[in-house]
Structure formats: C-alpha cells, structure tokens
Length: 255
Image 1 (spheres, rainbow, N blue to C red):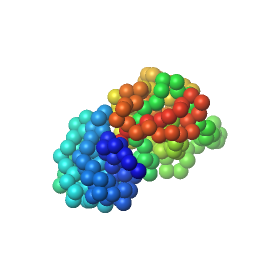
Image 2: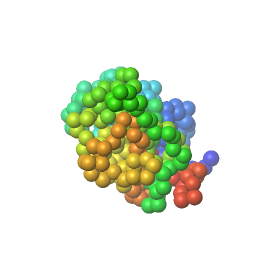
Image 3: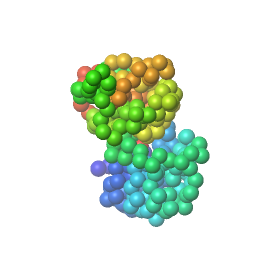
Image 4: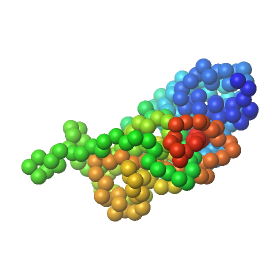
C-alpha cells in the first residue's frame, strides 16, 4: 500500500489509538514516519492516543523511538494528562493532575470505546437503528433503580454520531450539577472529543439539547449523541467509506 506522508502519519496515530503495535513498528521502523507528528486540528500525537487508551506497551515503544512526552495538543494537554493508569504516568515521570489541576477520574468509562474526533455534514438524522431506551420500573409509585446505581448520579448512554461502531458507553453526571455546560464537559472528556468540534448534543431519537432545563429533564439511561461540526472535515483527515445511510456518503476520523 503506497500511502502519502500525511496518510502514514494519520495511520500512525490510529494504530497508537487501537493498540496495533505491529502496524506501529512497520510505520516507524520501515516507513520512518515522524513519531511526533500532530493532527492539524486537535494537535494530538500518537503518544496522546496511546495514553488516552491506556496502551502501556505502545507508550513504551513510542518513547523508545523518540516520542516527545512534553508535547502539548491544541488544548494544552500533555500525553500524561490523558491517562488514568498509574503505570503510564510513572513511565512518563508525571505526578501532576489534568490541565485544570484536578485528579483524573479513577474509572473512566471510555476505555472500551475507541472513538475519535471526526466530521460530518450538516444534514444529521439519527445515526442508525436505535436500541430501546431503558425504562426504570415503577413499583408502588416509586421508580426502582437498577442495582449499584448511585442515586446522586444520572447515568447516561452516550456515543459520537455516525461512527461505524454504534455502541454506547455509560457515563455518570452529578445530579447536583445538571447543567448544559457540565454535560458538554463530561461528554467531550469521556468520548475524547475536542469541545470546539461539537455542533450539538442530540437526545435520541431526534431532540437537540440547548439549555440547562433540557439537561434537568434527562432520565437515567437516556441515549445521547455528540454531533460534530464541519470544521472536523479537513484535508488532513483520512476519509472512510461506511454504511452511513442515504444522507451520509462518508465519515472522517481525525487521528
């Protein structure tokens, strides 16, 4: 496969994100791809993605082959600030918190959900068949919550719209802070998306969240999607053909 330099750099970041060490070795050792290349929009390097996805072996390999642990993305985040794994933070000789000085979450829920900043068109119907929404049973007039659900937290099912992988992840929003801004911060952090690339938050199947009152009306296990802006559609992104329905002929994922 004869890829241009930009495509190889994007493939490098994609491989770091997915933990494909064999592909990384081919790109770095045989194709001599710049290990510190950045995405032109979000500024993420391969090391940022490896840390975000907690791939210890990939982090070690990248460092052994010249990855810069002190490089920042466009949000001024170091790679070490994107991981919750103590081993990776130790490897990177980092003992601080995130960019706001707060400790990283102990058990973020994005770890099994490989999702990336990307772009879509302005036409945005719901992205694929929807699962039935969860409805908490009512017994004697009271809502019965599933086991192990903290009554102080609102549990939401979230994803980025229009990805081939339709799975949701579950996130928790404090019921003491049910604001639009708090929800946006939570979703962009857990899904690994640059906030500047978010066009809107969609409550499935077809409702746009716009204000604090909209957030306050959400119920446990409500399904939400982040719909991204056209800004993410850049020449530096790799175009994927996918089954996106009649309104979408392509999707772009920025590594």
